[in-house]
Amino acid sequence: MKKDELISSLQALLERTTALEGKMLAAVGGMVFTKATRAEAEAISRMWFEGLDNILPGYGVHEGAVAKYRALFDRLLALALKASWRKSYIKVMDEIRLDFRSDLVAPVIKYAGEPKSALNLDAVLEAATVDEREYLVEALGCAERGYYRASVVLAWSAAADRMHRVVEKLGVAEFNRKSAAAKAKKTGRFARFNKEFNVGSLSELSATVFDNDLLWVLEFWGLIDANQHERLQFCFTMRNNAAHPGEAPITSENLASFYSDLDQMVFKNPKFVLS
Image 1 (cartoon, helix red, strand yellow):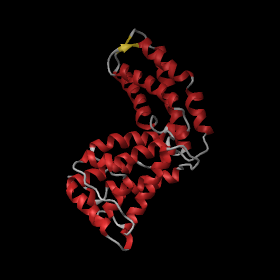
Image 2 (tube, rainbow, N blue to C red; image 1 turned 135 degrees about the vertical axis):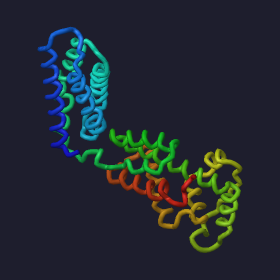
Image 3 (cartoon, one colour; image 1 turned 180 degrees about the vertical axis):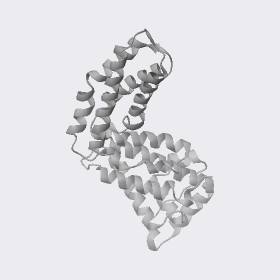
Image 4 (tube, rainbow, N blue to C red; image 1 turned 60 degrees about the vertical axis):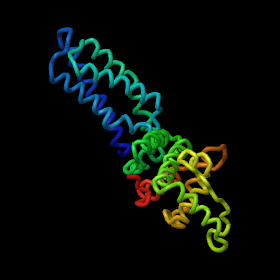
């Protein structure tokens, strides 16, 4: 969503909330039973949850402010789903309208950067397993809020787990044999590789084999080629930089490249399918 469209959506949400509260104030009776009125309250809540809640942090709106209005629109939705007191509707809509412009509209107007949501990182979820999604959803949440370092660390953990499970699927004994064969090479690309492993399980693999060495064995095995290895090595380097204090920034461009490489070379790699 473009900045001007977001501002217009916020204004429209505020106007509909104000109009509904006006009808409530003019109505009589203690309870609200009218289907049309409850439907409008539900529609207003859906405007928030479906079109704004996840977008606003990308335009500089503080997460605390988003959480505040998330709770308020959740209360409004709860009222709409059953017959509720008119005064309860009026109270929650008063709270919504009170600081709406200063909390939400003003930060969007002042935000001058590229919206973080424009990074479009969600593609990485398409081929993720249920367990991987747990890490990746949290990683994407960090990215959406500008915590790029945390996002990189979590996303790499999910990618490393996929690589470990591919080794488990193909056999840790075969992994050991490939590492020994790579070590035995005295010329060419693997001449400097000097590791030989004797792991017996997935847990031992993840605990004792460094990701850097894992990539070398995967290349020798033919599961990734030299170019993929180098790109994933760069991703791993970014992960290490993100996990330790330093002055090398992680930009939105770095993050987009990082997620694209993990998506294409790990999660959507046809040689890394687990089923």
